[in-house]
Length: 235
Image 1 (cartoon, rainbow, N blue to C red):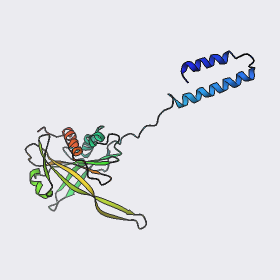
Image 2 (cartoon, rainbow, N blue to C red):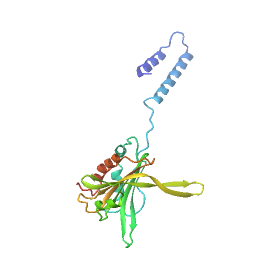
Image 3 (cartoon, helix red, strand yellow):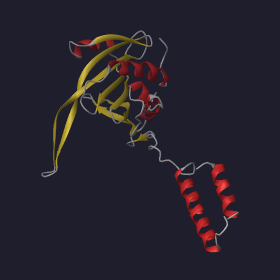
Image 4 (cartoon, rainbow, N blue to C red):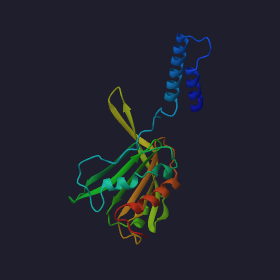
């Protein structure tokens, strides 16, 4: 019913046809008001339900932030509004987003803190981390398997390689957790500088359904996100 039709109907109610008594007029007005209310509730004035808001970055532990970049800074760089589009799943959104610091203790007693961030969507999970190791990326190719491929990201030498995720199976009866090989993860090791003087960024994606991830999605993310990470230098 259009707005003009509603106005005409109200005018008609104010000028009852010959022979309509007061009870008839009251009944007609009640039906008209009820119809108008239903129209408003089902039309423009009805608020549509919206999808949940994308997850904001959350610090998952109290580890002292690392320098020169923290896990929260990596999370902020990775948790972009266009991340689902870069992954090829534009209708999805970040369900969880976290940044943290990983503490490592070596045989000589030295402790190192490495920042990392992880974003989980319905189809993909994405992880971004960085390391200050002195080993050049080029020297790490021999440890990453025969399928490793050379790439260049923003003028920085990079290596593309595969790894496997870990599958967790929960036994609700016995309370045990069984682990095993999961799906394929695709990763990029990107040198921190164009001369590959040591240290790297690592971007990894894997799918929740164990299908092999899209390499083009991984490359798009690395090329778009890494230049926004604090400390990145142009190649």
